[in-house]
Amino acid sequence: MITKIYDFKNLKGDFTGGIVAGIVALPLALAFGVQSGMGAIAGLYGAIAVGILAAAFGGTETQASGPTGPMTVVSATFIAIAISMTGSLENAMGIIVATFLLAGLFQIFLGFINIGSYIRYFPYPVISGFMSGVGLIIILLQIFPFAGLGSPSSTFGVIKDIPHLFSEFNLAAIGIGGMTVLIFYLFPKITKAVPSALVALITASLVAYFFKLNIPLIGDIPSGLPSLKIDGLFSIDSKAYVIIIEYALVLAVLGSIDSLLTSVIADNITKTKHNSNRELIGQGIGNAVAGLIGGIPGAGATKGTVVNINSGGKTRLSGIIHGLFLLIVLLGAGKLAAFIPIPVLAGILIPVGLNIIDVKGLKHLLHVPRADAIVLVIVLLITTFGSLIYAVAIGVILASVLFMKRSGDIAEKGTSGSTLADLKGEQPWNDEKKLFEEFKDSIYVKHLYGPLFFGFTSHFLNLFKNIDEKIKVLIIRMDRVPHIDQTGLYAMEETLFDLNKKGLLVV
Image (tube, rainbow, N blue to C red; front, side):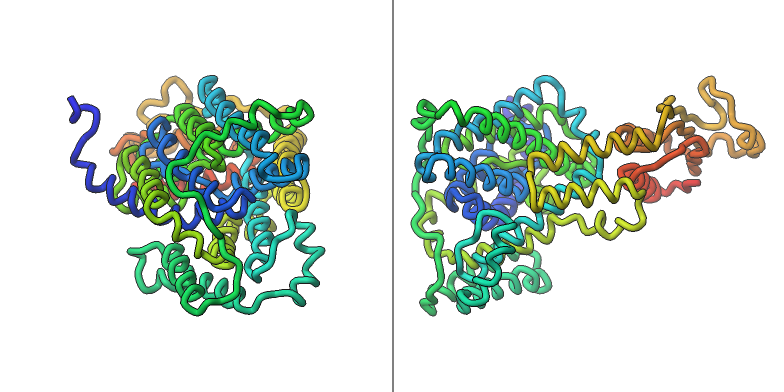
């Protein structure tokens, strides 16, 4: 009976993948916890709850979940607002817990009503601009901690206070932070068997400890199992209801997008297909519980997921083991985290921020349709210097309006495909009739009609998944495609790459 539930031949790979993913997640969880404003322990609690529960109940077998850059940036923004409303973190805990709990419940609801199937319709420039903006926020907010100073709460504050940085910086802190960044980038050239972030965390912390450097530390964190933080839920001021619902919705939608993007990456590596709605339910359960125990919310973590798969993880047990590993670290070595310097965590987060920036999208700004470039830049600027909440909404509305302006009354009429031997009722176009008879069984023709844009790319990516092995040549007819946006361009690029890997000649 047990073997029917779990195939034990995957146990070794799942165990190894889970442990390695946990090692990768540990320094990031601590760093994201500090950046959130709730402390390192909040990041660890969130990583444990989301890691275990999203894996157990989610729809992606190899997903490793926990705090991520985008989720932490939004959480940190909200936490700062909650503290300003109540006067202290302790007083704000009721609002914070309610928001994170509600965000998880919203995600569960989105999963139950099958919204996961529609998340993919977000335009690429909107996601690219938002992610790049989040990356810039992470980098900017780590400048002061990197120098051993407390960080302003906003990107505008960082820029405004830059003059103070040059007069008050801590040279020892900059040295330790710089060492962390160097190890982060250089250690993989020696070996990739051990995550460079963990090596950087341990090495730089030991140097700071043994040389007794005068730099800020994380400080004491609670040890043992977390407790429920529900007392403040019963004394929330009614004035906070609007902001609670507002940020809960943003976190739910962002967490869903973040997770499903990682799920697609996992699918591409493992050649499997995730269940998007079940994934949202699993992530929602994890985030709801994370909120109840004082943790920050999370999502599917790309780096942890890829490491898990590459280390042998094949089933959801690997993600559960990744979370259990972090729990064991909390119970057994939690007190050691008190000696980790803040500049070390800043030195880890700066490369993380750089990795989140969509370099590919930014490099192509001058080569993609102008409307897509405009959307990307506007979303990036609003995300970085304005409201995270409005950035995505404005981006989606702007992308939709610009698309309608470009397309006018052109509508998607559908697609069809077949071998030349059997066009399934559709008459071949005139130039197709001239193809030699002997090639008809080895050539596949796909006719496209209407614009290849962000609302159609998900279907487009699935059009070529199940082409017969005897097909040697694929002809994609795009004569009647009047417009391709940036999302469509990248979908075409991905499709051509996959088809070429299969040995197909694409015309």
